[in-house]
Image (cartoon, rainbow, N blue to C red; front, side):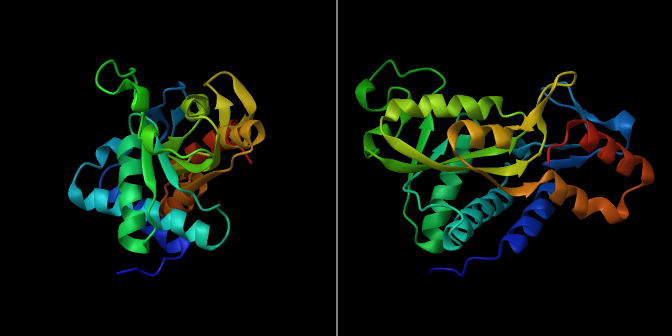
Length: 242
């Protein structure tokens, strides 16, 4: 049965609530309780999609990703795509869940692709040596890249290089769970542009997200202690992108 596509605000609110309940979204109690990111930055919050391992959580992930993509296609914000690419490792289950969700809820039948960290050295190496599902790829196919969180964007930039192995194709967008809306760089070196801005400028591809740092902040702002609020605003001032 084809379901009605929910509004983006509803998808976002339900998704953030689920992340918090399942422990995938953690909020620091103050500066001393901040989370150290891979970049070395001390963040007032942390999102780890790896915490979502039970059936209930995965069902919500499927609903959120499929609903967000279907809503954006419906509104003409995202071009209709035939393929979903989930980069290893966290993008693989997300892409699979989304592919299933689009078919189950909205009757959109897409194909799923993902990459290998190590090239295949056995069996039919010609068809999926480094990208699984490549044997089903059609020349000129439209691809939506799906992943978890975008911070500085280093991993996402490598994906575009990997997709060149498919030959002629078009990436219609990148869909992530949370866009941290941060400038690229690390704790000490802060660049002018965010990862989303860099991807759009360098590849002509827009980054879409189910939620953003601003959404998370607004969700908790009313109940925030002064110390916590100050930590958020200080972090945003130092690393936040417009």
